[in-house]
Image 1 (cartoon, rainbow, N blue to C red):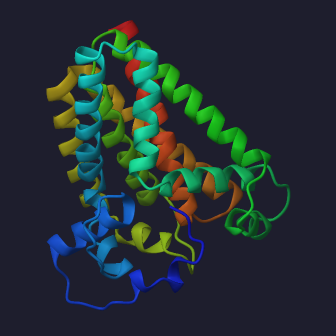
Image 2 (tube, rainbow, N blue to C red):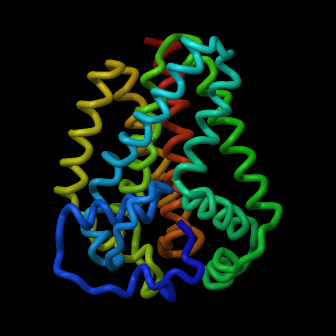
Length: 266
């Protein structure tokens, strides 16, 4: 969810009357590689920010089908399936959130003022901090998914991606928006009532799919997003689009960790 040059893109220049379906379609077009080609303003898309976990659930459902085929039809080992699923997530999401994760990694290793760190976060270079944080998140996510799949909790594939988006909306609801950038629209659109509503929906879906293990997954996603929100306040004073993108990746990682813990202890 990088902010580089996005406000110069024609994608955000069309002004139309609000439509729920067009807003959702625009959000899907914006955050995945699905060729829906539904274009609207960033403000209109942001009005449906609360719906993002449902979109994540849809992406997770596709990954769940892929996982089932690989595990039960092709009999591919769990470690390979976990790597394929993680790769699918970052590719299908158009690398948006991964870009934010890498950018925030570079910014966090810089000493200085919040303004200096934000400038580093928004430049086009990739440094050691970005590479390191991607490696850490990727290896923890994949290695956590392997024993979950081995335990037969394949529904965790859907739950972790839905929870990744819960991490994103958790970051949005608990963060302060800046005066510029696309991230501010998503932050400003979230309200407590919207958050409670989508939380109830995701917990219900997760419980139906995996019982208390699923609930742990959702709570893990919220923790991951909230932690990135904390880092944003501490280091940048505000949350940018990159911060929101990073919260998605941390949300997925902590969701998988939480479900693994639940499998061990429940």
